[in-house]
Image 1 (cartoon, rainbow, N blue to C red):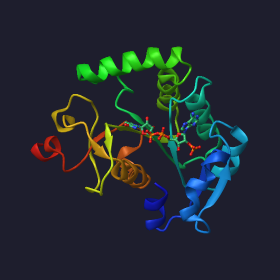
Image 2 (cartoon, helix red, strand yellow):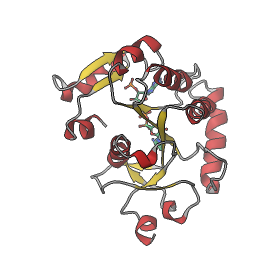
Image 3 (tube, rainbow, N blue to C red):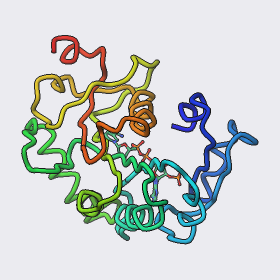
Image 4 (cartoon, rainbow, N blue to C red):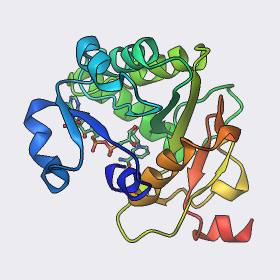
Length: 209
Ligand SMILES: NC(=O)c1ccc[n+]([C@@H]2O[C@H](COP(=O)([O-])OP(=O)(O)OC[C@H]3O[C@@H](n4cnc5c(N)ncnc54)[C@H](OP(=O)(O)O)[C@@H]3O)[C@@H](O)[C@H]2O)c1
């Protein structure tokens, strides 16, 4: 996301946990880094001040409300009118109209229980974070990623309002293109108050559609 944002000429402020700052070394001198957890309201308050857009990665890791705390901090502290783009997976539903492949349903159910028992992750917290966002009157978009793969860009992914739409059937997106979609959404007002489910634009299902 940082690379795409710099390519577009944006001034970038990044937030990551102190132990992860080194991951951003390749951007040294070109971005401002605020070190700290993304659910720290003070960290987010400092980072998003004056920003026209905020790209937020919502992860279910840990069992201490990391996603809900992160979403709340961004919703509360971002400048009024700022574009807010959040990431999550297909498993999040906005209106209950998504039709999921059985494999995804089974994975989410099994992973959800095991991860919570092991106190490793809490998918319910990511679901709750998205509910907060859907209920917000900020200019949000929640980008719902398919399975991801590494590799060169195939261009901007295609999207649908609902999982189950044939265009999404291939269920795979290049990681670099998920990031591209997030950054592109900053200037795409058609996506305000949408929760697009995305898929790679050169996947068989996208090409067929
Ligand atoms: N992976 C997939 O197959 C997949 C599929 C569909 C959608 N998605 C969505 O894509 C987004 C990114 O997923 P990803 O798989 O790339 O995530 P990831 O590799 O697990 O990590 C993303 C960020 O989460 C933070 N993080 C990692 N472990 C953490 C922990 N224990 N406590 C707190 N923060 C932690 C890290 O932030 P720091 O920089 O601070 O270290 C990291 O940069 C998420 O919104 C996810 O729901 C992923």
